[in-house]
Every structure is written in C-alpha cells, then in structure tokens.
Image (tube, rainbow, N blue to C red; front, side, top):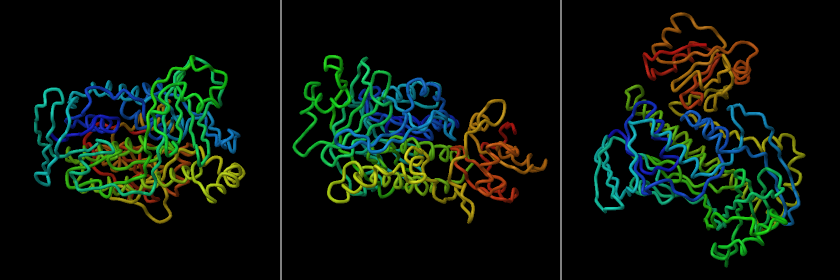
Length: 505
C-alpha cells in the first residue's frame, strides 16, 4: 500500500481524495465506525471552499452551507462597538469569503464523494496502536479492530497522521507541541429552532474579559453560541436549556425556551500550539496533529484542509515518478509558517475579546470602536485572504515580485468557465506574452495548460499588479514563480502528468 492515512476526519478524507485523483492507492483508517456525530467546526473561508470544489464537492458544500454576512464586535452590554459587513460578491477565489456549515454534514459529503474512488479503502472501527519506521522508504502501521480486538499490520511507503490533537503519529515521529501561551476553557452550545431570533445575520463577538462570547447562525434553523467559562464553571452547569437560557437570552429575546431544541453542550479548551516538527522521513502529520488554532478567526479546520491538499498533490507527484522526493520538504517549509501566522492573528483577535487589565481595556474602549475609521481596516476585518506561502523548492520568490506563494485568481477565463475548471489537476502557465510553437509543444510534453492573459482581462491585471509577464501555477493554485522573462518562467514548469492531453486557451 503506497499510503496509509490515520484519521478519516475532513483532513484525512481530503488527503485520500486528492491522492486518488492522481491514481494513488491508499488505506484510510479511523477509530469511529461512522462520521463523528457531534458538530465542531462551523466555518470555512473561500480559499478552502475552492479546495473543496477541487475535490469534487463544491456544489454539495454550497447546498449545506450559507454565507456569513460579516462581523460585529459588541461590548458586555451588547452594544455594537464596530461592524464590518461583507458584500454578496464572490471573492477572487470564486466563492463567498465566509461560509457557515455543520461539520457532520460536510464529513458525510466528503465520504460520499470518496466512494467514487475505488483506489481508497476506508476502514472504520480501526484504532491505530503503533506506527514504526522500518526504513527511509517503509513504515509499518498496526491497528486493532475495535469490535473484535484483532490486530493487523500493514506496510506502506508513506504515513499521513491526521489523527487529531492527541496524535499517536506525532509521538511516533518524536514531535511535541510548542505552547504559544494561550489556553482558555469555553462552553459551546448548539441550538435549533424554527423561531425567528431577529438577529443580524453575521458573526457576533462579545468583547468581555469576564464572559467573552460568540454567536453565529449556522443554517436555516441552527445556531451556535460560545461562552468563556469562569474558573468554577463546567459544561454540566449548562446542560439544560433552563440553565443555558440566561446566557443566550440577549439573542433569543422573547423566544421561549420550549421553542428551542438543545443539540448539545460541550466544554472545549481552546489552545494555541504548533508541532516542533511535521515530518520524520516518510511519516507526516497534518491538521490538529500539527497545529491547534483558537477559534476566533475560524481557521482551525481551514488549516487542516490546506495541509491535506498541499502535501497530497506533491506526494502523488513523487509516487508517480513526476517529482523528486526532495519536494516533500516543501510541505513543512510552506505550511508551518502559514499556520503559525494564522494562530498569531487568532491570538490578537482573542486578546481584543478576552484580555483583562489595562491592555484589554484600551483595546476594547479605544481601539475597537475606531477600527472602522482607520483607512483599509474595514476591508481587512472581513478580508479572508491569508498570507502567501514562504519560499521553498516549489515557491520560487524573487526581488520585486510578489505573486510567488500567493493564489492565482479563479476568474472566468473562457466559455463561462473559471480558471480551475479549465486547468484541472496539473500545472498551468498564465502568460501575457505569446508562446512559440516550440514552447507550446514543450508545455504539452510537460502536461501544463497555457492560459493567455489577454489585455483588459482580470488575469492580465493580476499579472501586471505582480510586475510579471507570466506565472507558473501549481495544482493547488499556488504560484510557483512569476517574472517578466517568459523563457525563464517556462523553465520552472516540471513534467507533472507528462504526455497528458491538455488544452490551451
């Protein structure tokens, strides 16, 4: 078996799907017999919506999600300190910037899609008990059938640990979590109701060092509240609607408790942590096994899905003989700083919500109410764009060029089709300069699609903004390199899926 994936949550299933799209066999092991039923993550941004579309579930995700209309920051008396609205227009990625959903529904969508790929074997009720590296090219995974207790072993070339915060695979590679100095206990409550709560249809963040809170509408009739717990409190104190009602009353107003259905109440400890290493030889960790992000910017699950797609297309390239194994070093080089940056941003937002003392008071009383007056601050508050990836073997940065490491826009290119639909799963060259016949033949041989950025088009404007004539775009839509010399840019295109039939527009 070329790849064994430990953990069949969204990160693990996304990795398996990506590998299968490139023809790679893999075994996906999960300790649960079916989708874990409790709701957890509720937000994905437009970048990750784009990744889901690449997995083949864009329409299905659209059907189970709803766009969030922006962000309100409120004081402890529920007065609005600042409001940042999102427009209905789609982002440069082609999707709404913020999307609310129910995680079990997303997981069912992902697993149903996985059934289209017979190269993936999903085995539930299988608890991995040991991961051992046999050599630089082999690893052994031991798992137990949770029903019978029978143990089995499987040898594989690569192991992907998508097994969560208490990752066994992380321990197997000798990594530990670096504490980024944040830990808070929060109450999470999910409620359904057909009643109209009459609330603004965006995310509400209550900035209060004693009882910070978050409210958001997840679906047509589903709502989520999160409250910071006091030292002496536990989730058991709010296990019924009667006990919970005083906390949610500012939002439910005159809606009586008997009109509400409590889905679940749980206690979570929000942490900010990142693994000291994400790989040892042929064993990798992804998602919560590699990083834990406080939920204040809704990037926890987003980061895991980015990990899955970033690593999997590279791994497929290596296993298919298209890429050298050295490119796998780029996974941690690119993803770890990106995850750390988003964790730090989440901590800043968390401080505005929950910090006590003089600093917290200044943030809430002086800075937050005036954010909308700062030029560009309103746009930044609702801008879902994340930092560009750091330089690596597959992100070739150069002075004066800012496109490398960022995402190529998913714009309409031809025949009402967007960039992603035309490019497919390979590399692309976006160019404002024409290619010679020899250059086009060479791109055909390497399996790369050529997209002409005609004057006046959005892609032409994007290249011009990046001070480039042409750019190479990877299968995950990240720009590998960009520059003014078309010949130099073309040299960077690897032979990925060589001899594939490609169309150029």
